[in-house]
Every structure is written in C-alpha cells, then in structure tokens.
Amino acid sequence: MSGRHVCVLYGGRSLERDISMSTGRRVIRALESRGYRVTGIDVDESLVRRLLELRPDLVFIAMHGKGGEDGTVQELLEILGLPYTGSGVPASIQGMDKVLTKHLLLAEGIPTPPFHAFNDAAFRELGAKDTLSLIAEDLGLPVVVKPAAQGSAMGISFVVEAGELPRAMVSALSFDRKVLLEKFVRGRELAVSLLGDGGEARVLPIVEVIPSSGHTFYDFDSRYVAGETDFVVPADLAPGVAAEVERVSLATYRTLGCRGFGRVDMLLDDTDVPWVLELNTIPGLTETSTMPMAAEAAGLSFEDLVVQITESAWV
Image 1 (cartoon, rainbow, N blue to C red):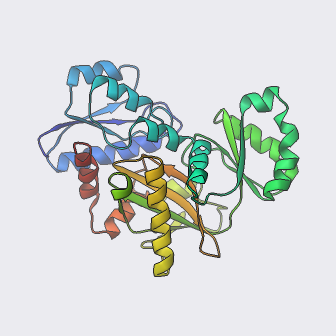
Image 2: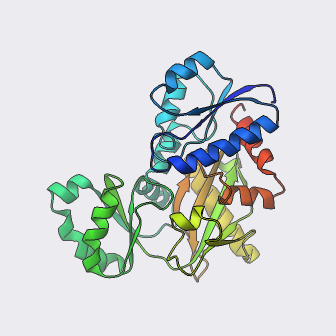
C-alpha cells in the first residue's frame, strides 16, 4: 500500500554486490513511482542500528549471494520483528546450498542431474582428490564443477578431460568451501519464475535462455552483458512439455518451502525431461534478468512486479 515506509537492502559484501546494486536501484525507483516512502540501505555493519532507528513497515531484500540470500539477513530481520520480502530462513538456507537443494529434490523424486560433492576439508585433509577419477567414471564426461553456494554462474567450470578436474576443484574452492560435481546434461536452458507462496504460487511464462555462440553456458557475461544472450519468452514448448516444466518448477518451489518469489533454473533434455539445476530465492531484477522478462510477458510491468512482491510480504 502506497505511503508505507519500505527499506530496500542492497549491495553488501558478497561477490554479487554489483548485481545487487543494480537490482536495488531499480526496486527503489519502482517503489517510489508507486508512492511508497523508500529508504535504500547499502548493507554494512551498521545495518541493525539503522533499522532500529528507521523502524520501517517492511524490508525489501534486494541482496544476492552470501549474506543476503542464504538466511543471514533474514534471521536478523526475524529478531528485529520486521516483515520482509521473499523466502524465510529455512528456504533461504536450503536454496543457497545447491547440494542441499539437490538432496531435497531427490527425496521428492524431482529430476536433478546426478552429482557428487565434498567440502574443502575432504579435499585438503582426507585425500578426496584421489576420488576424482572415480567420479569422472561414474558421472561421465564432461562434468560441471561449481561452488555449492555461489550465484550468477561464478566459479563454474566445464571439464571435458579427467585430468582437468583438480584445477577445476581448486578454482571452485576459491569461491566456496563446498564443491558440487554434476553430470553435464545437454539441453535447452529454461528459467521459470514464480510469484506467491508454496504450491499456490503463480508460474510466470517460461523463458528460454540462448547464450551466444561464444559461451558454453549461461555464464556471468551472458547474464549481465546486454547482447550476449537471446531470450525467448514464452519459450517455444509443446503444451504438454510446458505443463511438465511448470509442474516440476512448482514442486521444487514447494519442496524448499519458498514464498514471495523465486526462480527455478533447469535444462530440458532431448527427451523433454526437465532437470532442475537450482532454485534462486532472490532472483535478479536487473535490466537483463529473466524474471522481469517473464513478468512482462504475463502483462505485469516492472513496477507491478515489484509491488506484488512487496505486498505479498504483508499477507
């Protein structure tokens, strides 16, 4: 409701700071255009003190990555008794950890690529590097190596020869303490955005992501550099396939206990099986992000989208 005071949290110290700054600024402009009183906060160690002084009606979390998307700031807001946008603490923790997400998906029978994972202690102290040839044999090549809790495709490597695995592991461990090794699934990249809570969430039009020929996958530049990626909205899918993609996305969202908004990233293989890669509990809302594209295809302006996310936090 216009007139209410909303604090928008953005920036912070994660590796996704610049993306968060872009999301935050767009959200601030959208809310101001709809009559909200808005205070933007570039998050630092003064956050709690500032929130205690301001006592906003609501906090809009526009932070990506560690500190903002992993339950950390959500726990602080729970302590302060301030309502906030997006998923709660458990869903945020689960969604940020790709390995935990995949275990939860497997338990519910939701398709996700086969994988192995271990943390830096196993690699450094327990000789986990000696399992790499077994992993390559089990999963087959190529293998996708990625940090377990990092967004925006940071730290991801595509390994086509087993001898490249140790270097890819070291690279991924520079971004996070836990590493996921995942079977490569060749297929169409789909982004499915959702609005609302749990199984009652609304699925927005499916976006197909087609990186330019110079990119092996939907990497950082593909996501945030204009012209590096083509988007098809809605994706050109047969009705039955689209229905299955939506079903799997809703099941993923419900399994993790998400609310407010989110985005499921998946690969659709040549047999039309949708393989879930991850769930983003705070999707990007930049000019090149897929959720605003999906909202527009559903007839929602960017301002409409931001207002719906904001108002859902009071329900």
